[in-house]
Image (cartoon, rainbow, N blue to C red; front, top):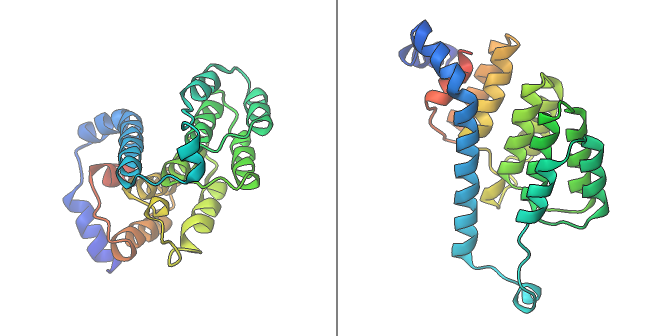
Length: 214
């Protein structure tokens, strides 16, 4: 797909200035709502598959709601990191909440520590965890780290994914496109748009084009 064709598609989706301003204001809420929907869909698919090993049959499954609520009330990123290190949580949703809370506490540097904790415990991530990290790195203008993680998680291994829960979706790509647009790197933004359309066969939506025009 040529850049001219891509730009033609963008022009067809362009908004007026007033509409763009309005959409920019609601974009953060729309992104969070999309993440919530993404989480619900993932949980539904897990229930459908009904995959339980011998341990899960013998022991009632642990529900991480208490841990997530506890993290949401913590007032220090150091407290959050310490809590994660000292406990053997395997539910990735707990770590997604920790990333969001550290961002709310204006401590984006702790996000990398959370990623390392997940690695050290051999916890299986999902696209919600990855998208949450990329989003909050973008919030704090950590664009180099954002791009490094995207390349590490997706571009270097894109042909190796048997698990559909680790395939980037439209939220992931919209996040990366927005980060590029915010720093004026249109060339890289078009790279992600092209990757999304031609490699992953994902159709852009309003959030995608609003991200590109932000």
